[in-house]
Length: 171
Image 1 (cartoon, one colour):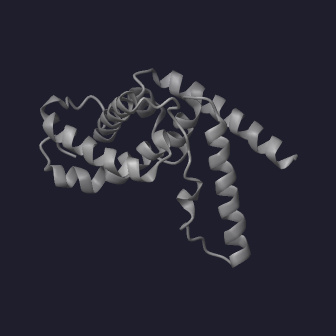
Image 2 (cartoon, rainbow, N blue to C red; image 1 turned 60 degrees about the vertical axis):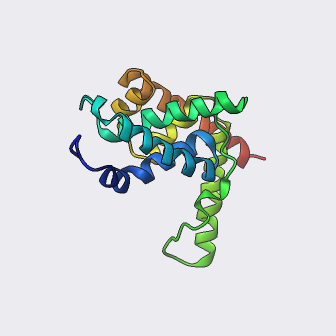
């Protein structure tokens, strides 16, 4: 995407990525939608500062992260990541019979619960890698860290999530 692309084109191409990133931070679908709008407004105001050193999706997620943290400061929220909306994937439509769909959706809910239980930044890093399919380099850029930092935290997140899922299944 060119740096001088109309904001509508940027929105069309990247709104879902930004919204899902904000859902991973906040756990709140409605808040994520509002902050997505604010993200693109801020991107429009500062498009002249985009230098092309990272993908535009990374740049937009960095803006979204800062907007979310500003929101938290203003709202004086205590917890940063709370995947409250475990029905996020309720409308997932999977080929197969009803029982298979139910079992897969339940497994997705278990996975989201496990991600919620992972300490920060593990949950966010896992979400960006597994769901948003971002590279380790892109994840590192979002958090202003190295690619190696993102890689290490992703594997730690996977380990923690496996532990939560294993503990849950053993109950």
